[in-house]
Image 1 (cartoon, rainbow, N blue to C red):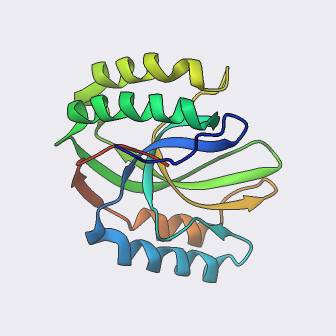
Image 2: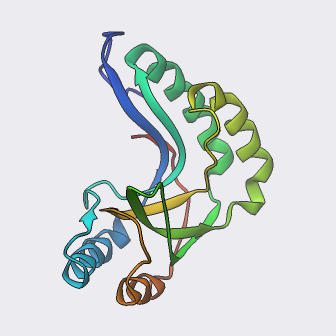
Length: 170
């Protein structure tokens, strides 16, 4: 699994482990992003070309570490294959300066043990003290505050269900 061509240890990549959103939902995802920025122009939508369920935030990693992580993620992918995920429901989190607007993800209960094993293998690469729940980020916004009700209503209309086929490092 050759994901990164980053040999230089001085070059760092902000990395995540994720599950790609299936192609069958990509057009609807792109339309969702357009709708959200129409409702709230201040939102900065994510890249419509790479939608994914975010499993783990790995922070900034050197190329050599990413190659090691790619091997671990490839092994873990077999345990997640076929797990049925449900995506839908508005949510957000932030630090007071910036908000992340997201869709909730359900379905990991069946692989709780595997999630724990993967989390254990990856924890030394994560920032300390960061709690994390798998989600699908749709946009970011500067500042804090409540999500506009029209944004929440649009996100609450999403009801995607699919089986996991692969895990990737983004």
